[in-house]
Length: 100
Image (tube, rainbow, N blue to C red; front, top):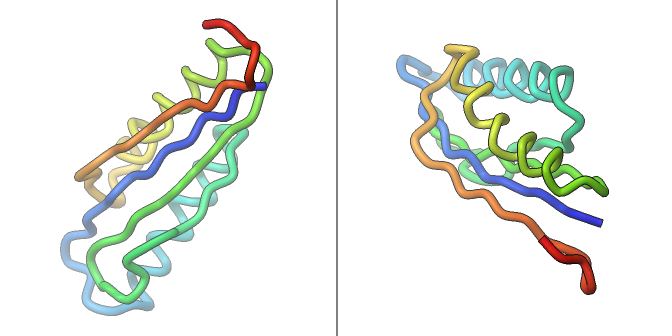
């Protein structure tokens, strides 16, 4: 079993309310879920108007597939042109006994 995870910090220029921010975040989350088999959620900075941290994870048995998904999600979020990705942190957790 391979677990891939990531955290993406985003900046939303011109957002002037939490309601406007929430609208953008929901679009990013929905589009990401529809494109990739990931669990995704806003995990930090909920009280800030223009910034957010989105966390995501994917579980699978194929190391290459999980790694590819983990690497593509931040680029996909950026390609939506709803927010600017300012930082990305990703990683993989491999079940004991697996070799990669």
